[in-house]
Amino acid sequence: LVRSAAAAGALGLGLVPRVALGDENEPAGTRPAKPLNILILGGTGFTGPEQVNYALSRGHHVTLFNRNKTRPDMFKGKVDQLLGDLGTDTSALQGKKFDVVIDNPTTLPAWVRNAAKHLAGNVKHYIFVSTTSVYRDQSEIGINENSPTVPMPEGLDPYQPDQRNERQLAASSNPANY
Image (cartoon, rainbow, N blue to C red):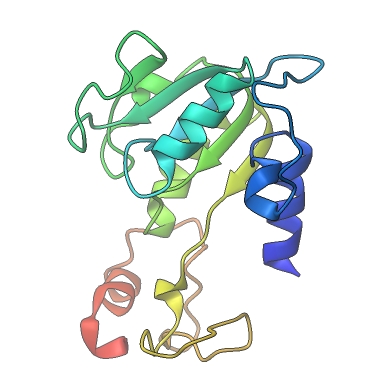
């Protein structure tokens, strides 16, 4: 359900090429009724370049927020670039407004909190691209929402406001939990 909702939202916003979903009749370069102002966190790693290129081909305005370390300046002159780090410095996001944010790289809950302190109230749609790394057995084929996850210590919630709790960080980064 979670994956279906995220995919449907991304498709509805015109962020996922219909051809990727088996609709090969989508005319190349089709444009939405209204171009969107899209922020992509990351944007140069695993899935980011395809998202950036597709959004640009549809006439959207794209801004990337990243450290400019993976494929530096890959989209120089094609997109706006905001430099920062989700773990330490998200100040470049301050005062910016976006129709859509695509959150690709988030690994730790603190990264969401750090971005949210500047994006809260300034974004219409936030698409969080999750990962299977929360699941205990990465070798399992067909991991889904019902698969066992990494155990958290009793009483701790990774999405509590205090993300710098040492026990939480140790539990979420301890390879023995995977």
